[in-house]
Image 1 (tube, rainbow, N blue to C red):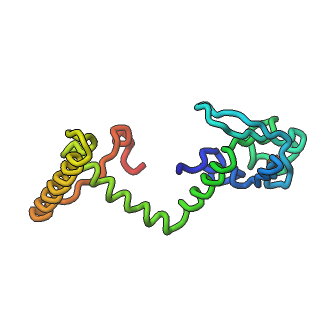
Image 2 (image 1 turned 60 degrees about the vertical axis):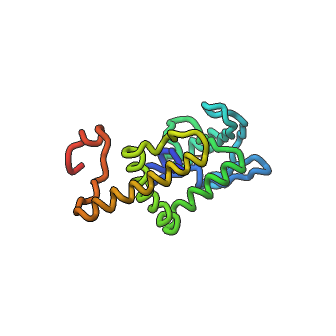
Image 3 (image 1 turned 135 degrees about the vertical axis):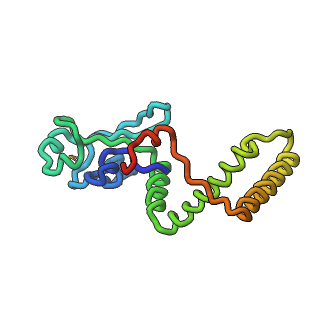
Amino acid sequence: MRSDPSWQTKAQQGFDSSNFQIDWDNEKVNCPQGHQSTKWLLGQDVSGKPVIRVRFSGVTCRTCPVRSSCTKSKTEPRELTFLPQVQHIALQTRRQTQKTPEWKATYNQRAGIESTHSQGIRRSALRQSRYIGLKKTHLMQVFIACALNLVRLDAWLNGIPLAKTRSSRFKQLQPQGD
Ligand code: SF4
């Protein structure tokens, strides 16, 4: 999962949604200063999926000593938008899991398999089956895997080094050293 898109998470300071305690049964949220939300509204995000919007008291937030860590609004109180309970808990759990060394070690394997996919797609049109039916498609994949092994064996025997990771054209415009 991508990380929380809030400015607090990006800046690694301030209070993002994980700093708030949600009381699902009573439809209340406690902020890091111990204040309780005053509004709990069911709504939809831009794609029509259900979300919950929570708002805190304007009076409380305006006089809060840590307001700048909570909201960039000059006058409005803190608002939060989060997913319904099951999805929210699953999302938070996954984000926490993704921070562990064990998860990172497992995910690092993706870099290797991604390069294999890339080679198969560019060299052998692996992305799309040329045949109809799972059996023929599977056979095609086995042949492509064999062919890639031969290509790699040939490269290894002839001392051809691994290609460098490519960067996008936009990235290539960036001055060296940045
Ligand atoms: S700004 Fe409002 S919501 Fe944020 S910590 Fe202060 S009182 Fe709580």
